Length: 318
Length: 168
Image (cartoon, rainbow over all chains, first blue to last red; front, top):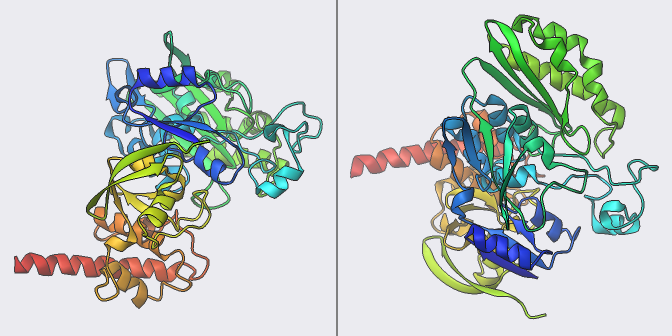
């Protein structure tokens, strides 16, 4: 295997253009375990280090820019981001301290989806070749014509709730897309082989905003979410001016619960818990009955109701 | 296919090294096989158990899922930096005193996570200790003795700092 270490954005784009099979390593905490477990084979890795355009957390008049190589531990402790409670809560809940010390925000939101029929020891997955391992079957849903592996990023739902955008560098320049549009399917993302996510732009928010991120896990820490929910609210004179509810680990990509918007906007913030209690079926509708070694599909649909209610409780001041 | 090599500059436990290594090897394999620092243990290989924990520029990381070339230009601290048989570090002594070592395989990783915690926080609360050690799994002790060991080490290290402060 060939691994190159690149410290300049131009050189990295050039290398990826000349070596389209090369995979990017930022923190490495998503890809390297799969390589060690021989769940996938790569002959060529491009290790990005110290690229100035991809580092740091900077605030301007309209946005906070978070470089894609920013470590999760830096996000959870950064004062510039202290208003973005949902983001800080999400960043501080990812996996374990060691992972948060090493993993980057870019890698977190571009991490591979997971499924118990793929992320398992090789002897088993070699017998049961699923779509993700080059087979022609989905063991999760027998009639599915494609992979339905579960979206597992904690950070992405929070970023989407804040209407964050992704800044992507390609050979012909930069493009900017909403983070929610980064995801096409369980195995395909809206980023080409020779493009690099260089950072995230999060719109500035005022003091009259509230946000929270809640998740359910089998263990108290060191775990992937079974289901998660980010809620963001802009308040004006005691009324809800804007609300956004985004679910993670609910399907192949993050799910925005748009039906909740007309139920809440214009209503008093104090009415929110009552509105939320009446909207549980709507939220559950956005969760696919995905089973893994820990929970079955129907339990996951029930758990989403709890995380949504907990996020709402967490958001109400006082 | 010829192995791709890279010369890494690395500071391990206070000493500088330059080593020509295959670009794909992990920091863990480099430490164990090139530097014979076998105190850092190899177990899951997937960032799921914590036995390979080392400090990279002062932060605990899993060396089994870190490439050696990612540590180029950085400081690495392993369990060997702490003490030896005759002269144990207060954290190592506390793990013995509290009965926090049984099979011992998780211990070097646990101790390195403890080291990061106590460097940043001299008197951590129970919840802070549990959070700091959440990335290290032990199948023997049940964790209570490990939390006790961290508290003993914290007291001992604070005492040592005060003693040294008085002397200087």
